[in-house]
Amino acid sequence: MSASLAPGLLIASPPLGDPNFERTVVLLALHGPKGGLGFVINRVAPLKLGEVMNLAGYGERAGASSGAVYVGGPVEPGSGWILCGEPELAGGAEGLIDVTDHVKISSSRNAFDALARDLEGDRGSTAGRIVFLGYSGWGPGQLEGEIAQGAWLPAPFDPAVVFEVDVEKRWEAAHALIGVLPAMGIGMRTVGEA
Image (cartoon, rainbow, N blue to C red):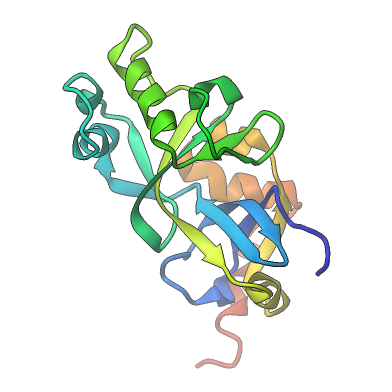
């Protein structure tokens, strides 16, 4: 595949066989000759946002947030990332990754500072933002090989699937983007097995 798949969604298909990605949808933020970078958008972490903010040294009010945090992937699970549905939510952070003109992602302290200010201020919410721990990464040509083996179904990026669909329905919503029902792939894993 010579064209970039980013921004896009990757739907783990049954033959993938990696428990880190079982029934997941990955937002592919970057993809090119050097590899790919993505974030699982439908796997909630066992930690709440307040716990993460406390661990990062933010105040009591930010630490009281019961918001969800997502497992972005198995790479560097201690790293924090914030996906912002509007650029201004990143708080002027440097090193923003442009997913689209409006959707940005950052692991910078500035982005977390902006989130803490909103949690501690009148806003008190994470609206328009998703916090991830860790990320999903692929080396040069690795993702293309996995797609060729049928491990991933590429789908177009739709911010509504990421920001508006309930987490437990994102798997089905991603499949709908490509006109496939999730059940269509169930038998693929068991071919040749008794």
